[in-house]
Image 1 (tube, rainbow, N blue to C red):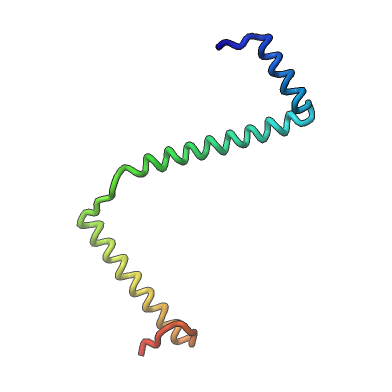
Image 2: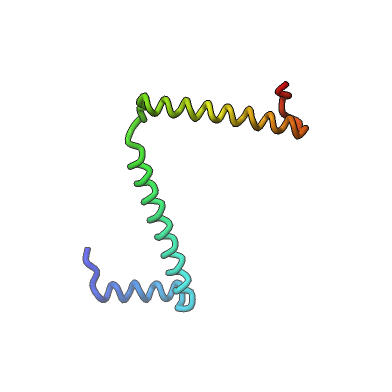
Length: 96
């Protein structure tokens, strides 16, 4: 389907009659914003698909690092509970 000059002129005239020349910049600006948002969302979806290559398999080093981080987190939680108990804040068990 080819659009020639007469068809394009008729489309432009119809748009001018529908929106008016004063509202046309606002309409085109909002259309541009919508297209920009749509394009960004599509790019984000493509990036999400690339990052999701399959189930993650932990090797021995990853498992060791995970257990180390879990131990550090447990120690930090215990220290926070101790500090809350010293400050007399409710909701923490007395470590003694």
